Amino acid sequence: MKAIIREVAPRDGLQNEEPIATAAKVELLDALSGTGVRRIEAVSFVSPRAIPQMADADEVWAKSWHNPDVRYSALIPNTRGAQRALAAGFREIEVVVSASDTHNRRNLNRSTEESLDDIALLIPLVHEAGATLEVIVATSFGCPFEGDVDPDRVAGIVARVRADGADRIAFGDTTGMATPRRVRDLLSVVRPDLLHFHNTRGTGLANILTALDLGVSEFDASAGGLGGCPYAPGASGNVATEEVVHMLHDMGIDTGIDLDRLIEAAALAERLIGRRLPSGVLRAGPRTRLA
Amino acid sequence: MKAIIREVAPRDGLQNEEPIATAAKVELLDALSGTGVRRIEAVSFVSPRAIPQMADADEVWAKSWHNPDVRYSALIPNTRGAQRALAAGFREIEVVVSASDTHNRRNLNRSTEESLDDIALLIPLVHEAGATLEVIVATSFGCPFEGDVDPDRVAGIVARVRADGADRIAFGDTTGMATPRRVRDLLSVVRPDLLHFHNTRGTGLANILTALDLGVSEFDASAGGLGGCPYAPGASGNVATEEVVHMLHDMGIDTGIDLDRLIEAAALAERLIGRRLPSGVLRAGPRTRLA
Image (tube, rainbow over all chains, first blue to last red; front, side):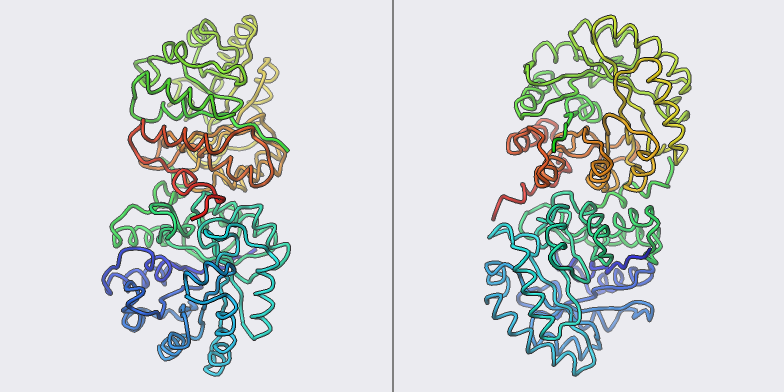
């Protein structure tokens, strides 16, 4: 059995940490490109005023190693971002819409419906450039403002964007509200191509185990667990890639990743960011490392 | 469906932290006694030279609230400890033996076989006092010195102690080497009454999910995740009770525990111990707590 990991530390991770130097971002991206991971979310093309952490996205991407064995993607918020990503050479583009209307308004200053209309216009633009668009449905497992999100609402969004031509769908556990029960509830109604879980409440690997059981085997993860939870100061955000890979390899599920190299990259992320990252496998090593 | 949680912060948690004052231990034990939890591992009766954290076990127990709705247990290393526990009024006694011979020698200065002989002599002594003995098989999911432990070896130990009259069996994931795959491998050969998991490598809740699927529904957990991993400095030890309860309640599994009170007790543990504990639910609150 195989699973695909998309490493998101260079984008989602760094975007939720204090800004670091361009050279440090390139160093981390290059280290991750050499781990055997098959997909990396490299940068986002967003407003430098809104998100200063990604102001140097063009430079980071231009200076980094583009490993031909890795598929790189970029996150964009709008048409302007898509144009920058396409001009930089990206052929896999991601865009976010929140299942929760309140969260979408806070995050993107428009309703979910308005964002879906924007995405409908974005898809042909991306396709004309020979690229693909992945729609990430944020707050799929719950919203920090509205609470539970009805799986039927997520399914409605998926139906709409698929009809509009979206190439791939991801479900985002934006603030760590996913649990094994919620994963089962949602995936029994509608399935994504990829799942993005947080470990904010300790359920990260339990959620992945549940998703595997339901037939989804592509996951976002962030080296070291880089990137906090924006809604709970001091809390964990993304699941740590080395914890995910450690569990998957132990189950006999291939990811193509060299766990030792990945742990080295996570240790590098920790040094570059200058704070202790929450990954247990980074701290204790794999279970096969004896005393 | 129901699950039973045994809260181990007062014993296992505090034993793996810097010593705190007797009054602080009593305060924590009393707070936990009021959470609705049905079982608490209260103290251990061990050599104060070996484990200064438990030197005041008699005083802690004498001064604390004995909630009639809670079953309290004490851990003991030998006959002398059992006599102290019985004299203090405990009717549920626990003793540890390691499945790994190397770990047993390092921990108890004798072979696994010699410890099993000791336990055979201990059982009638405990039974004569009207008490029960639980045998905790440490390193059941792996040994930090020997690596993987053969499930058949664990099964052999279980058969021996059951034949000798042990009342209950627990499997201990002493250094966080359990994974969903290892839980499945071991439990398909032999089942315990109770499982004790660590979260050293992030798999704590995934392991519990796997065990529930295999029909085991009694778990040790420590408020706040109190108690580090003795073999990996700075790493997490016990699974955090509030993370376990948060996941179980969300699945509709009853534990009898009031999660808000439990989180208050975990916050108290954090204040008393004076270091940040690793629990995500303590940090971020339950998923139902909105922004």
